[in-house]
Length: 365
Image (cartoon, rainbow, N blue to C red; front, side, top):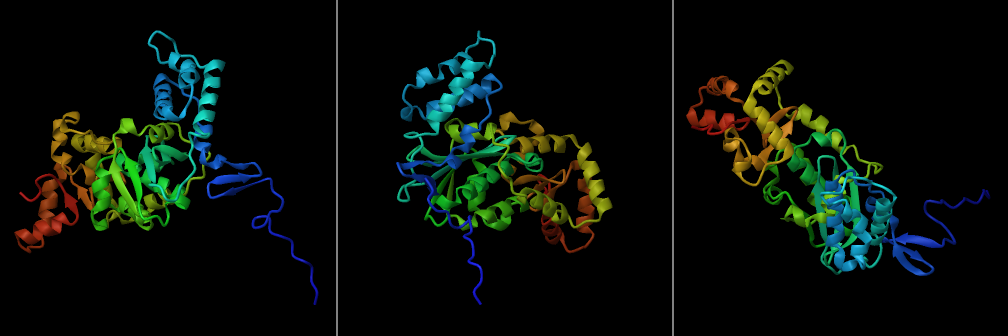
């Protein structure tokens, strides 16, 4: 039986187009041009709201100065705002300078074409409000990306946000990173280098799930000073809010809440009440969330015992965990010791059993 001729699917076949996106470029009748999706994070970046934001923007421009002709003239209205005796005002002149700067840093020769034979580097950074990443080759950007943090992600510890930025960068640029022998990841969070190289089971549960997402990529995570991470830092502090965000963070949060502690609800509530009243644990929680300083001099003396294990501490359900172990405040330790010794399996057995589920400084002694 002769049926009706099927119509072409517009999602698969399109005829007589004037331009076609292909492997990160737009092929036109006049040659290759820049794919707007690669520079959307810069083009849609909101205007600065204070002097600090202007300084970050000028830092981005200076980083790319060797690719930008007439940079001084281009950024003069913005540099005026950086002077101490000039009051803050964002007017037409500054907006025009910002528009011209965006156009300059998202065009050629600033934005280079991707080369499959060249070394590939991804800059990744996380701020309190967003994630930023830049795909780089020969110290020149290939593509930019950013997104805002979800409400769940904004409550992550800083180390979790930094690893989330790496996951976002690798997956957003998967067309470039998947299948390569090695991709170099740059982060300003130094502890991530050792955590990525350690056995997976030693990482906290939330970090484990992020690390599992990175298993399909061959990455070399290395530390780079924050002042040298200009592109990713600027993007993370002025992220896009229109980018579709996956629900993975919500899924991770729900999973963590159900598996974190195998205890009755009443007992978990008791632990949370004791933790909430402990001043040292409160300071520790704030430090974990904001990120640890480089040296002990930047924290209170009462937090010194936790400094050596700072890379393993994460937040979960308002509680602090060292890997899979719950950090116990001083008011609970005597009761927890009594419970550990209740089984009468010897000193070593009691210590080993306790260390599987809980932690506090000098616990063994």
